[in-house]
Image (tube, rainbow, N blue to C red; front, top):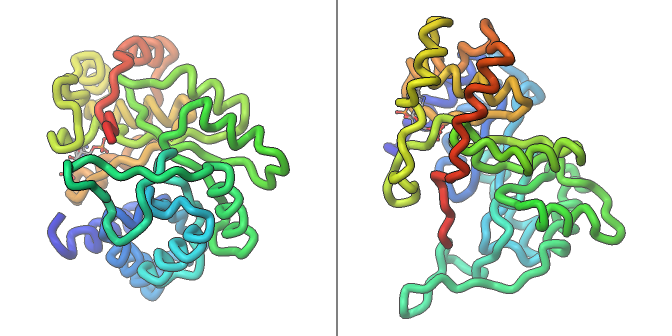
Length: 282
Ligand code: A2P
């Protein structure tokens, strides 16, 4: 995204009422996010404690000794004292080093064997040090969650698991498992992604063109996007829609003045195709 557009968008979002901001070192715009938050605090619009910032531990930083320095680097970029949530971005590791996507001479990813439980213990230490208020995971399946939950001497459970979740990929089994364990599901790509072919399976049809979502939207004078977001929050899934467009940033916040009936919720649930847009083939 063009330089500065993230700064502007985060400021518009905060003015609109958003408080949860989902970021990551690998988005290369954490400096702009931090600047937006700090400017809004300086303006008196918000206090630091009003904001819920989520940062992420990248794949090249899984060895336990790298976890805290990596979070400290993120805090330095943000120019904040703590993140509200720090999560392991993916359950698999790449070779540590400067390359974000390390590849060998044949263009194959260079993986790295690490112990997720050891990484988790280093995450726990970050919480104890006050650098992260809460810790969680992302893209973990049930088996990977169980590995952490069953770890001998576990100090803190993951508070959340960020995974793809929307009407075409409703995650019923994982959602139920996480509910049983008090783990919040944070749904990424809640609008069906930007359909960028470099990382999205575009053979799956566009979510926002769905006739059911559009028909239900018509009834409430809402867009398919608003219906999709409302559906997720109404089933207890946190949503993190992405937009760098001021009108759509505002549109995506106008979802608290209507509610879907049980029948409509069921109708939307039935759209599930069990096909993900973000295949994470690496
Ligand atoms: P833009 O940034 O130009 O608004 P997801 O949150 O599922 O990853 O989807 C993000 C994509 O959806 C982006 O391409 C974003 O584009 C677009 N988008 C965001 N909000 C809306 C909306 N209300 N209606 C249509 N498209 C939207």
